[in-house]
Length: 349
Image 1 (cartoon, rainbow, N blue to C red):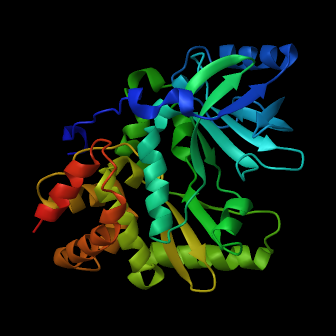
Image 2 (tube, rainbow, N blue to C red):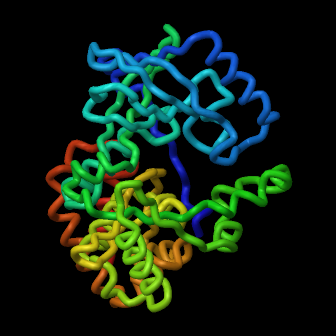
């Protein structure tokens, strides 16, 4: 069913490129040579493993301030590094921040569906879900201007802190399914969208930071294993899960549900997990709410277990309540397919 939905890309003519603020990334000839050599070593592959492109040094100019940074290529797919318009991960080494961020990505807006990615984080904030700072900008790389980029906060202790979650943990898939694909890539048309490949290794990892005591790590891991073994909905913050489902429904972003895209935040003080929304790829919703839930179940076995804990009518009623709460904030959002999906949600029975 996932392939049956029609994916319609946003047009970017309406973004008002000339009115966007600019961020400037510059790096010297030696760093440019290193980056070019590393990209050439990928030998025209369509995707890469995480450590195949190194870290480089440069300077960011943001909000009229300059910062020394370490940067790397962002993303797995070739469009992030093969074209002139590259995507970058940035870490500011010196004091100060860029739009309140020290660790962030500079991502081609055509990869992240720009306005809808911003909307997803805005709705997450409105529904009291974990959210990241995000902003549309123009990017200048070594004096070459590239329009329509997203500056997107990375999940770090800073992001947890501004969400009031400095003691929380993030859990995500470890992407070990990629390791066997490099040699056989030519025979796999779209490995990142192949659910069967990803489900072959369902291992998850905890994202820890050095400041975390080992005992806290152990306790969080134990809770995660309990959840995986029992699928007891008592381990899930159901209100947050409904909020997450609501955003997925409004955007039609089934891509956000795929197992290695859906991350969870664990609050030790509640003992519960909440989903994190990001990576919007918009689609039109099906006419049947049951088909909508079935697609989510198909794409993520953890979400499937949570959904099975309540009736279809329960989830529909809860989602409609959240939509009513958000609708006033969506009246001026005409980016496809927000208004179409809102009408479909209203028609579901």
